[in-house]
Image (cartoon, rainbow, N blue to C red; front, top):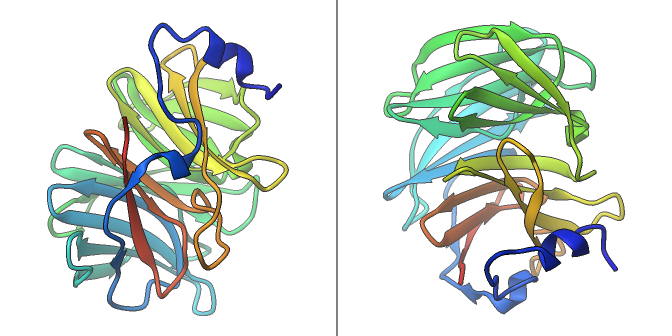
Length: 249
């Protein structure tokens, strides 16, 4: 029995798939241009936002692509000094939130708010931990630290409201808040990929789905995850990167 079995048994509704290969796969889109080491994604309409780190040159990058064709629309750098590791990102109205951290645990992060169309910096604040993923929840901003051992909740101007231990043990790479639920993708301690649905704010697991690997041998939830409507998007591979999409039941 998995650690999530009790939560699944308690579901008030049926969820027809507990593994990614049970879902209908949509066409795979190859992204055009160097994406280095991809991190987070989000999707709106025909646009895909991607954060990435160029480890060799110590640069943090934010891109937009055409989601349907993979064509690069624009890019910008987001690093500042020793902070060059962007993590999982989230759209918020006309803005996109990007955590840009030092490339080590227990360090510091600049939480950036950028214009989602121009990618220009709108505001920022610093937190005293490495934040690897960020979601916009109804109370403000929710961040997960290195390996997602803990969550932080802040107001949009950086006031810390809560610090919460991650009850799942999942090393979350990217996460999104949709309709009172936090959907997070990441790695179990065994290295297996998993997507979990967490009720907010209790963080009780209401669904779990195991993901397997791409045909290149990369765990599907190794990096970016987004969800729009009933479509799950995953960007697990470094450049040349491919966007995978699946239809949820």
